[in-house]
Length: 256
Ligand SMILES: NC(=O)c1ccc[n+]([C@@H]2O[C@H](COP(=O)([O-])OP(=O)(O)OC[C@H]3O[C@@H](n4cnc5c(N)ncnc54)[C@H](OP(=O)(O)O)[C@@H]3O)[C@@H](O)[C@H]2O)c1
Image (cartoon, rainbow, N blue to C red):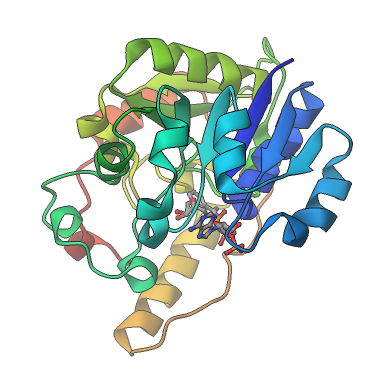
């Protein structure tokens, strides 16, 4: 019996967990507030789901999704995640996470920063460049002609194969971007990031412009992006976007 662990059980994790349960995979969810706070989520996911602490979720998982704000990455349980394939969805937003100079300057990527903390784990950057509501909207069974591809990156080729197999069971093709040094190619506001999965791309670009404007005027907006039905993104198109995108450092971003 396969088990997918989760550290962080918010917007992204709960969408992935639902796909996992549908694929016959057990899920163990965890968050910062403790297992009791996840009772409703677990009940909603059904009998394949249970809640635990982050350490327990890390130990239980054959793979583990880490999906928390970057500001908390040092709290990820490195000892329990050692040796595991870790799917890392985390992005850097200075307005939420505080300024991190090595990311602002482009000296490293968010994925490398998290991998450095999880030194014994095999980190695969995944599910970090698609809006949460597009995960259920665009998941398709293997062999479907309208399957969507997601970029992955990581330093361990075998771990990337394992992650790609899992992601395929969840409903998506993958495009391997290379090692974590290359994962900037799908960090926020690069060409492959979020927008290509929108049926109406203006929805998200307008939203980002509004958020950027609010930030410049000194407020931190809390509103989520408006929902959108999604449009399948084939692997060939994703490869082109990944190859052609310029790097977007904090200073180049509309929302940072
Ligand atoms: N939402 C998206 O569309 C999207 C898309 C791509 C990537 N991402 C990235 O994925 C990550 C998660 O995003 P999200 O939207 O799912 O966030 P979210 O809905 O705010 O959920 C965050 C989760 O992390 C948990 N958490 C926070 N600190 C923790 C800690 N120290 N230990 C364990 N769990 C902790 C929270 O638990 P508590 O509530 O108990 O604190 C919550 O369950 C972020 O880095 C985000 O930038 C998000």
